[in-house]
Image (cartoon, rainbow, N blue to C red; front, side, top):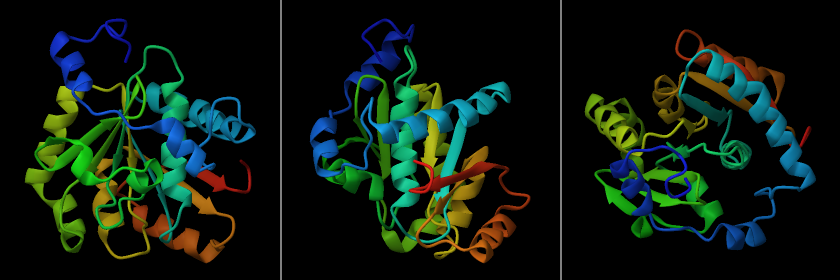
Length: 229
């Protein structure tokens, strides 16, 4: 967001302006896997953005999920780098929402914690840069799945997203084969990117993920983390 160049209503602009700033450059120094514009790794995420988000726009979807089979760095880093890639497009606003209540990996990579964000109900919000906002959920890790399944939580999420009015929301969905939180988060996305950890995933794991997704959330594609980036 760019101080009046996005065409947003004043209330929306004020909502973004009230989000505290994250130190993205410092996070990139500590976590070199957070790609910078011009890095060779950024090219892979730009390609993913163009292939996947173009299809999403054609379908008039607004929420794209990113997940993986087991707990790991592949999906949260892919979600973060995809969000940064989309934020490089001019006059676009993006929200990256980490649904992984139990682990909060996106915040860890960005060097933030839940107490520093702007509070809006269960949600905490920050700005990574002018066009990218980051959201996390303050809740007990023990209730991760039940919170995501709660209709009241979903209504609260819709209300927060209406205030921010992003062009697209990228959801980091908890891993699909590690408990039931991933399955609970699937209906919040309109389409899903399944990230393949080149160091750990097997064909059997991926088939099990696809079986869990069936009839809940359409698969937009596979992204090979470390293999094609």
